[in-house]
Image 1 (tube, helix red, strand yellow):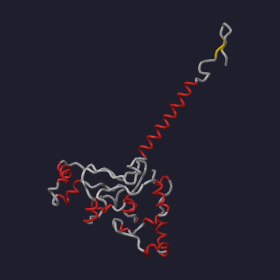
Image 2: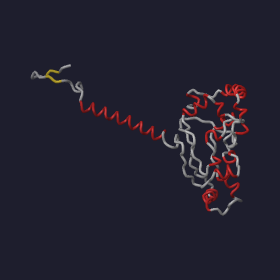
Image 3: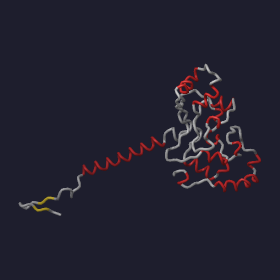
Image 4: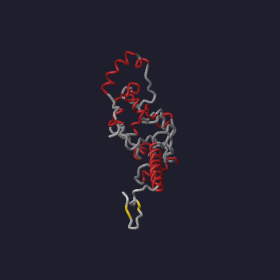
Length: 229
């Protein structure tokens, strides 16, 4: 639409003609927004807390899984008390540590943080090693109940002085297991046995055929709502 001036001139109404500088600023602003959001997503979901194999944070107490779970043979469930009945495998409380250390190595300097938190009635600030993204639902009790061993996901923690992540815990890694769960199952009585290995008899064609009904009965979900609820 053209607006006529009294003197015979004409001009375009305000806003009808695009401003090249404004358009360029809009494009650059959009590109910056997309880049920022992509960077934030990568920083959150691509950090070692979620995906990096080898992630091994320091802990407030110099605790050795090799000594406790390996040399002494302490069962995983003694410290992670909720793993069989809850989605979350509870981290050991100060009270659990003091069950033993009120009588064992009571003068150890390494145990000063344990004694201090126990006296102050505070929990130990353990640093999580295996941490899934907040939008992922995972139930420890469901996996142990069907025979998925601790070492399947966490590795041979009985050989680690300081626990580190040995599996990527990515969506693809989980889906591969759900599509073929037989490779990860063992007798439910052996879920915390770090030395358990599938024998030749369990790998035979007959044993595999016999186990297939169990796998079909489990039918672990591969659809989105199985883990994203």
